Image 1: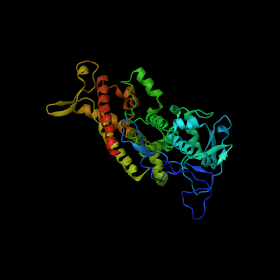
Image 2: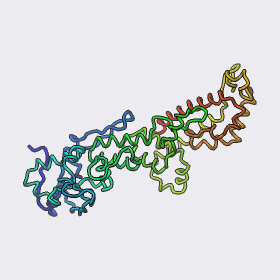
Image 3: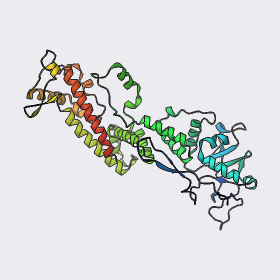
Image 4: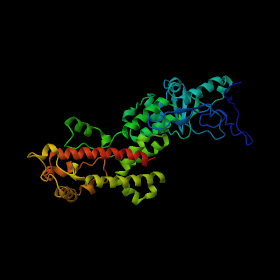
Length: 400
């Protein structure tokens, strides 16, 4: 018995089965049928970042009772040398090589196999343009998305480099490649998103006290260190939820937490912000918790030491006995001087929106830091980095 249902010709009548179709049209968008479980294949999510997302491989093509969608030839993807098959996405038609589509997309490999096993009489009844059989992709695949996929695959005149795609383009590529079962392209799209939204490390700025020239240059050269736009972050959150990309979700969520523009837009037009109610609650919780932790950390003087059963702030032991130590090396006046420094400069309030990146000492300047020795400042920075690492790990729990 043939594994696939046959492709039958003939026009559909008012009493015909919904699986019968207008004569001569080969549709690939039908994803329901008895083969759905046997043809299901998982596409892995971001490596090490969660469970796989199940993506169904397209079923053998069946006929549709819907009218034929008019086709407009794509000038960039047409000509006798362009290919031997026509793929229609929406109203756009593309003449493409069967071999390339079959090699990269299992969706088309299955569709072509069905057409080849259907027999010559059945193939002759298919709708054709310039002698090429027409295959329609699912309606969710727009012409722009399909052309992006073709560019990444190197089919046609335009070539696109995945490493240069924006967040929106990478999200589009992931969706279309998943729909058409182009697993290698989907993997590269996930990798691009993971680079743009790297949640595996802290989005922090190096301090002028601890950064060497090489690390400072690296920080300036990597655009993902700088705050991202909240519109891109919203796109990243949606695709991260859709494809189970926790690392991308974490970084994108933090960018929203740290974005004043996002919270301002939310106050002006809460309905216009496309984010789920559950994620909005998580963002509010993360923002509140990070602000609280930041104020506590930045108000704590450097070099806390246990003296006589009490925790106090004292100057670093390397500087305490020399001339380069802090102006106030111990006692209540030392803690009071630090609190005065933080309050008068408003560093706690200024850094609360972006506690992972805000560099206190770069903004304070040399004059304000003169009463404090270099050893104590560096120790305070190391302590703050430890706190930030704890806060970053805590985000995983908040975003679950």
